[in-house]
Length: 91
Image (cartoon, rainbow, N blue to C red; front, top):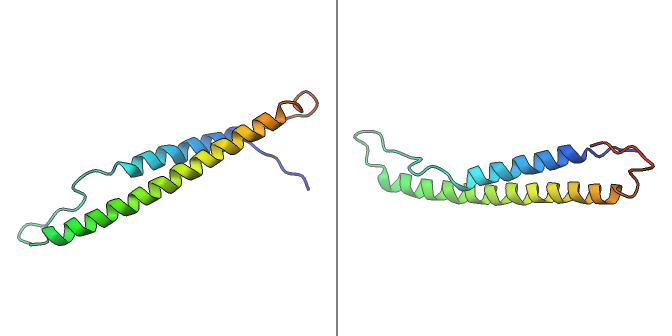
């Protein structure tokens, strides 16, 4: 079985996932606003708190996956160093 590993792409997308995780971890305050004349403040506050918890979980998962992709790219690059003189390595 033959396959190609694009180390640069692994590293790139790992970084992008890390960036996405950072954005998800810092949501804007006041995501929910009550329409004029509606008494929904308490319910929206609970909803917003749940949404922040969900975003924090997604951020952690994106950051973890991004770090794993970057580590994978680094491991492939390290493993390819001794072989790069004899074989073409796709980056």
